[in-house]
Image 1 (cartoon, rainbow, N blue to C red):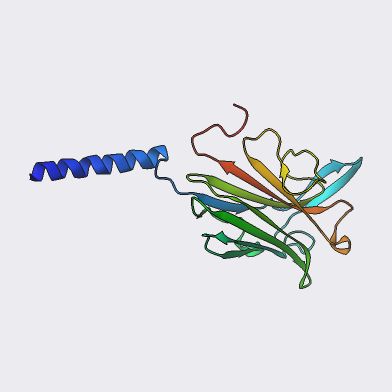
Image 2: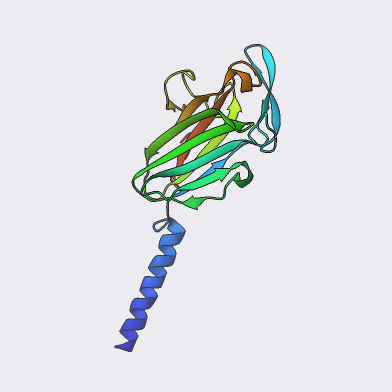
Length: 189
């Protein structure tokens, strides 16, 4: 009888270990990232500096990201908390991300994104200031969310920045959500 219990325990531990390695028991997670610093790009025949420094008031120093939704523990991240480490989210329900950019205490850009959660998915939320999203997307002035090109699942939201707080014309705050099933093809298959 003792041998049977030990054998059952060994099978259970082996199954759990293999399941963890293979992702069977993996939890859903979300990671919030931002580019850092400044980089030069060409846009509409002009050179622009994309300012995304987390300590720069003309960048993302005033960024606030609130994560919540049905079944999701509320969490507020500021520029000092970013990029975040992946944190657990439920495997079902609806997640909402509220993004606010503040300058001198006032909100100069804000918006909300929401989507359905899925089991065993690593979600990634990228936020940046730019005239275009950080991922290839069609119709970047269309209604939110904008669908990504060349990715199995991705969505983009564009949030206007008040004209007096922009670094250049067409600058917006972009939120891109990526879905990754660990161990599966994530791009061109």
